[in-house]
Length: 322
Ligand SMILES: [Mn+2]
Image (cartoon, rainbow, N blue to C red; front, side, top):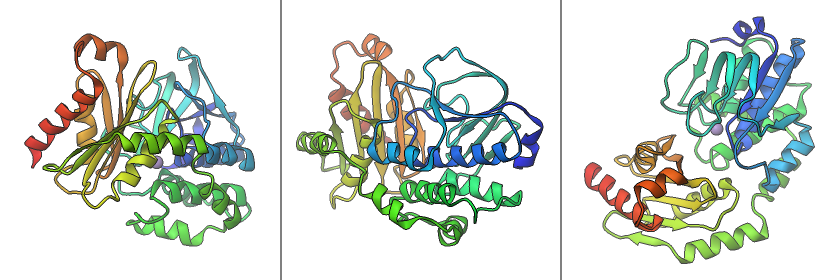
């Protein structure tokens, strides 16, 4: 799909996944800037339980003046075209809105492809995908330092600070964009609050570890869901840990983050398995996440603690694949 194909629609609403991360914000901002330049009536939105609160993300929104709106009404009907960015329409990680037309621009695995979609799962970030689609239409990034820096940071944070870049397009974007390096370093150094580092520390003290399957399970106090990903990235660096799940129980459900560095254990498959019939899970082969609605969980697993639930599920999954 080409961006030009979407130009016949107006208005255009761009939706980031719930709990947007830097990559979702940046790629949404890219599409917003593109369609704004084309004279469209554009909105950039997200929904979900939480409003953006992580310092690096609020800094990003403020510094680049990203016009993102937080909507709380799930019943909102979208006039014209809805584009889900860094996520796929109908997936568990994005609130499903009714829209006249839907398009998908994403870099995650799986999901059913809609007629209007561009999904490239080999790319390190959705920012790379949006950058590529925009330059194919002749968009000039040289005059757009804010947008360029945002896209660069989107890739930076989706690839663990560029350490997981494998696709030539990702490298090309990283090397070609003219960006404000000072801001990147500011964001990089504002990834955690003091409270969050305490939450992470306490959670790690209570880890469950299985030496046979070399996995770890960690439960945190309720916090920004992005912190789950940070803790699981950190855990995976431990020599005896090959896979891990980090989760917390929120008012409406269990949110979890999954990581794996072994081929036989795909993080997206493990996440889908952990989500089970009542929840959802997905992502990439090494990084994934999911959600289980609390009401259904309590109905189905009346006497099981969440620790036991995850331990049991992990054991079953590993028995199956190893
Ligand atoms: Mn992404």
